[in-house]
Length: 253
Image (tube, helix red, strand yellow):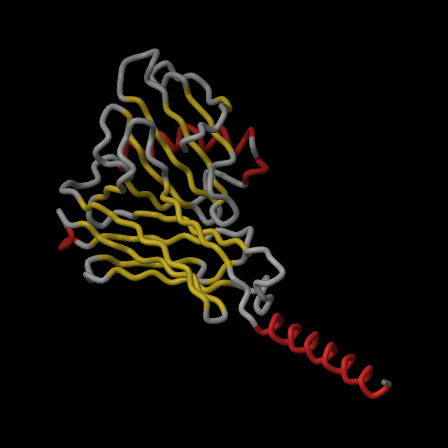
């Protein structure tokens, strides 16, 4: 009787130990989400369009899957990111190349001159511990050139001194360096442009019309911690030189 009891206990212990070993070495699954910047305005196609040599930006976030049977090897560790485009007609950068939950990566696709009138298919992959997640995005490259840069910079610069004075917590000053690109190039009447500093994405829009409806707006997103803008500001009439003021961030931005 004593021998039998010991055997049962040993079997139970071995089963528990085996289960723990299996659990601890099984890769922890994760999910990945990819969104375009900016999102498409209401009433517009969700298809991403671009001119050649302009930046198409996609944001990537990851999340841990929960569940006691899903394993925990690598849980909380960074997930490696990569992106490919099979035609060779685009330059792609991923930054940062590894992220954890709560952080954001940017995948930047710049179509080459040869890609005009083509649709680029970009595959974004997250990998950790032998597990992978993939998302596919497309970019329709249309004919045209960016002629909005000077006007977009002028609109941006109407806000920057005011932000430097009234929202010093943002760290945006007259010396902040920006890189710009046209977005939503086929949308008329309202113009769209993205600027990137080291810390911020500034999405600039302006309404091409007569006062008092000639507004311009900027939406600010912390680049590597948020999928959506955290601040929005408006000048209600450019020609009437109205002062900027804060507005709510629309759901679609």
